[in-house]
Image (cartoon, rainbow, N blue to C red):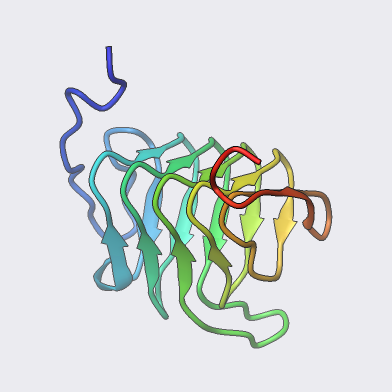
Length: 135
């Protein structure tokens, strides 16, 4: 059974938990692709746009920021089709995670991650990359 067979676009209201218990600030800046899976207690700040592609999976307790008041960075966050973000990850402003990339749990992502790569750590570093053909 396909995990997305019964998927429906969630109701998203400014600063209020969805039925899946994740929250978005600046809802107008969020573009959510079909068949996404966002874990409970995830926070998304879309002030400068957050674009989440189709079939993206985001673990619980993640934070996705298009703006950071600590270092004054801002910029869109793009999570491309079929990427996977492990639980308790932080994605900082201006970052793009490529198609089919995997971010290991508890990683702090401050730079772009290429398609088909695996990245882990604080800060996240690419540990494995392939061409998309399984190699």
